[in-house]
Length: 229
Image 1 (cartoon, rainbow, N blue to C red):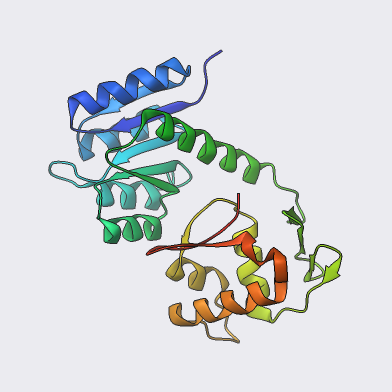
Image 2: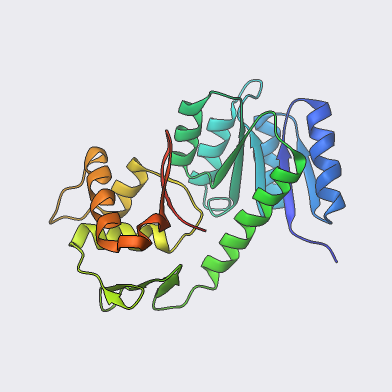
């Protein structure tokens, strides 16, 4: 049975064929592109479920490809996994801020890449099937948006307005890494002010209030935060 369609964007032919081989072994449908321009054309024509996107491409680089994918109506919901060189932390942050879903660093194991692909596709499917009322219950933490209620284990937790919004935002997308900038954009309202620097303070407060369950909020060094998958 055919699985989801994956667009692989990579200008190194050896790496491209290696990824192609391993994905086809898992019965994924594979579409290949070796440049940013080819990637955009393939994404619009083939409508893949996920794009494996090398950031170091000739001509149009991967960040620009990601920006265009996420800003176009037809491809904005297509999942993107970035492939980046070791030490290119700034590119990772930029890609996540543009809407990429995950990243792997070269050199990488094909098994790790396949596992990341499965995880991102699984998260996307779970989000589509999420309960209408947005209730989250994971790792002993219960979040009810309608009642603005949070429980850690059997204990009710009293959170500030901003703390609740940050926890809800992260909790609805377990495993997804968000930059401080993305968190600010998601929780900022007209009646209160949140800055990237204050996100760390709010997260610290959240962890303290959640007690032994505070570890559900994980720090991704140099990037931001995520809710434990």
